[in-house]
Image (cartoon, rainbow, N blue to C red; front, side, top):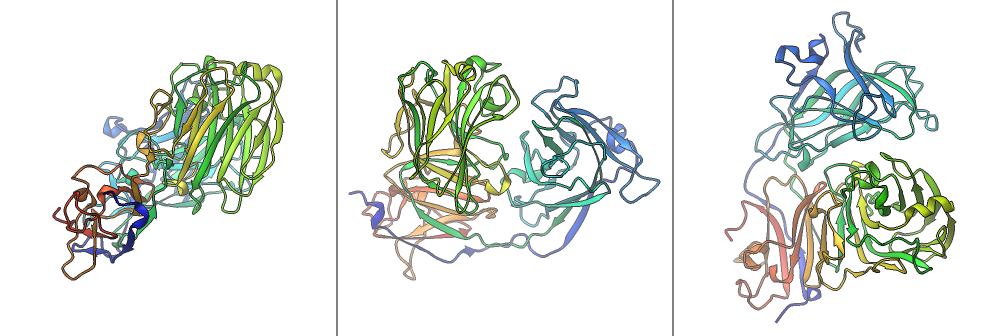
Length: 542
């Protein structure tokens, strides 16, 4: 007989660790560049193996050594970065931005990042530097601030992982010391270089800044026992906001590319139901994109198609909040390397939980209905709306937009299209069926690991903070003195769990009923009506 999840009594026991890890509080500062000489920019002495330069971006113009110094040292200087937005004319790729870096391996050997679990290895916990903007630089006139700068590393891959950002008031033209903490993450177990980045679709003109005295703080991080939490698993399609980058999309795209409202049977509607939503902090963005593929420059579908190569896009963007959410319908035409820049509608709603419906009553008029709210009308220019004819694909999913939302999640109960010119979509994600590959493709997602269909035979989500220094999840049916602790995988016949991944600063595991303890302690035995969990190191023998 199969045990129903609701019969299980779950309890958390104390964390057990039988090994010592990072300990102590010693801190060391590691100077990467003081820019005392031009060679610290060109890396000529090292055969120009890792010079400062641009990774990608159309706005980049140049990097150079400059004699101005944050400490007014006549025998030292700084790194000068020049960019012209949106396009400097140097035939760069990938949109109006610069990503200046000290090569791909400018820190050699690489630093161990805060997330490296090698015993007794100090890890980088902070990066600091001095920065100054040239007064002629373009700035955000609404905020009265110089452009916001991202700082990060590629980690052990060639993605862009952001430690954090900083923004300086436009009235400040002197040197400013910036300090950015490096939070624990599996994305920077190693730090082989550092990048300095700015992206903008609104700036127009020069951005010139100087950087000096790049220093990482490394420390013996005290071992903090991970805290184990447990949640009932509810059937749904779950998207996690992936750790990799703040703009990484976790999303699906329709296989059928005739999902346009243009030429459909009005009213045409696109709807989805959100059943759960991270709130601490709130997941920053849930979205739906409607992309006419005749306006996709290279024809390929990937996670950044809506931004980088699709010149036309209409989106529904829902931005979370602890007390309410905002939603907007925006669109763009004939504009690549940009989000939609024309606002059709903006509303506030008390919750993201419930059914959202975007309805078109004609080619250029429609309504947005939020959970528990009345429909709100919007309209589009008729000539712009006509460019959204088939072939058109529909995307939906989530993205973090800031590092604090890494690992947060949103659960979808369903997704439907009605009246479209092609094959209507009617996907129910609570019926324990796998995603239908004839309906949905994962080609537009940062990683297949960012999503999972939670089924009725999935009992519990368990998660704990990372780094966990190699701890192992263990379970037992009772807490008697002779209780035997075993892994959920053991009870699952040594089969992998349905979901087992690091998302943000949390390790997540999804436990099916078959991975829960049995009365006699054997796989497939009579199920116990109790299950206790703990983390331990070393792990159980089986």
